[in-house]
Length: 505
Image (cartoon, rainbow, N blue to C red; front, side, top):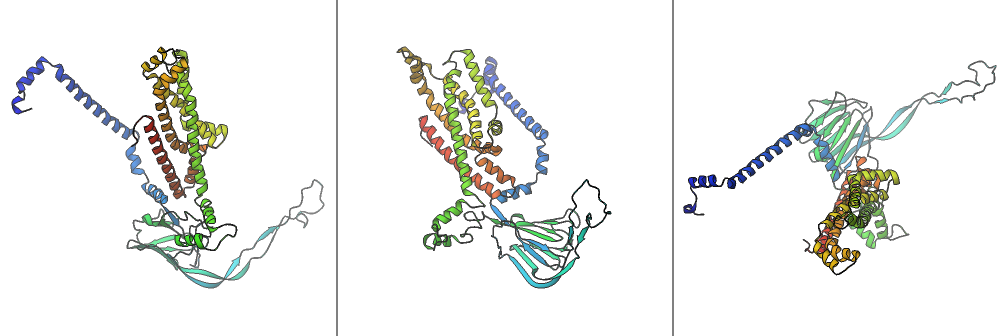
């Protein structure tokens, strides 16, 4: 609109006075928008206060959350130095160390000496056999040899032993972080700062100087915790230095420490499989390698894959049976198909009952009824989806175009033929599309209900999480679940697009 055609303020006022309803609607819309926005802001403020969100965020232990996330994509090697009273040391690694039964990492430097020392072996006492209880009277005096319960004590003795001990240990976590232990002193260096601690070989650790930001000690003499970020951490006590050195990746993913292929490079493994001499005379190296991968004790690939397949089958069977049961019942629930008020209400309330109880609750119920296993999971999916699909199917039937059905009726078709040719062509693609969507969704739901004992990978996932130390296994299973969900999502979308006559995107 040009400036010549614009209305002047006087003309606008004249139009508003003659036709006030034209401007009243826009004013009401503005007021409604302001009220809705104000209400939303008040609700958010109330929720922030009622649930103490600020307090929760302020007191959350984000460090632990970060450690858990790091554990998903890394593993730890845990050398532990035991300090004796004479300041010598021994070293141990965690049970089932990822380095194998005889770990000797290059980042742990040890100075050893062979020493001869006298060890005092404490006296051992062996209680004498107690006399059998008897009701007969004894003429023996108390404390006689026959009835004596005194212990026979052997005298303590000394023994001379020759042992190899560690006199100095240096653990290098990375270029800026290392821990040195020698002569009753522990020196920790991190990012240019050095903390020296005195240990007594018993129960007291004393820092020399002020603790840096990466070291904490709750009370004097108690253990000192050293936090090195993504590199790892350590705990220093009076008689023990525990180091946690973190490495990126999943240790021993293909071959565990019991496998003859453990510790070998990919090239060496390939060479053994293709042209190397047989390690096991009973089978080829390829068969042995595949067996070692499947039965890897640390990752349990075969068991994880089997449980994942269980989850997929559980979701498929539960959804399939729910669709088959909901299909005939939805015709009884649809008012335009079955014009009987009592029948409609009974079937609809039955659907409401099935879907009002969450799948998780049904899983708990069937786990108690049938015991842990896939049957409980399939039953939970079947019950929940029968109610939900029945409701959706009946609503789809109530929204069909009656003209097609009337046309089939007009040629004298039987009631069954009317449903077959006048109703099913309209709703069958919708039914199939909804069933496919629920199948895809139940693949995720089956994982959750598996955690309460309904079988599948959900139970395996929950077991790994409960250990609080196998987070890399948790990450592995989560990735497998995501991969399966992505695959079934793509398949479901493609099938649903073809069913409703659209091109797949």
